[in-house]
Image (cartoon, rainbow, N blue to C red; front, side, top):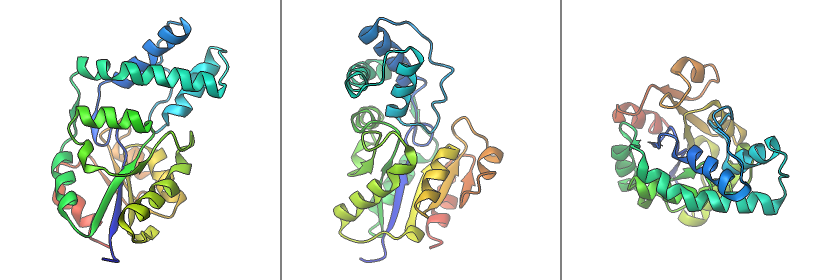
Length: 229
């Protein structure tokens, strides 16, 4: 089938809410690896990549953001993340499980991830919430610390996985922040914003996505946007 559509999902604030599990794992990793206690609340996490966040944290404490320090810090974070996920009452967001299942069963749709999480972090989170099996490819913080660099990686992997081309007009980037919208526009893709993170519908609409929703509880309305192309 040559006319497949590509759906690329953000994770945190779009698919799931982990109630700060990632931030707490980053804080614990800072203590375990470098002996520093710090609240990371003041860092702008939304829509950022884990590798970008690690650079910010290490520079903030003048630890040096060498490749080795970044690697060691993020490895420690990944070791601590599962325990943090288990201690929080996180959840999948409204409509998500239904949408993932509907899209999974459609032969005209390929769905993957485009996320600021590291690949292993994405797997840990989505396995915890029992939705990892819906995704066979994606782009992650391992590919670049800059979110706008991730789109081409995701599209290339989708093409390799499905052996068809996905032009921008049939590619949808879905997320809960202005960074997700900008990332989609960087490759000319359509963008669907959802106000289940820290940004309101009005905030997101200001950045002119293709569509914006308060949440995805109305799966029919979401599918109507996907099926408009």
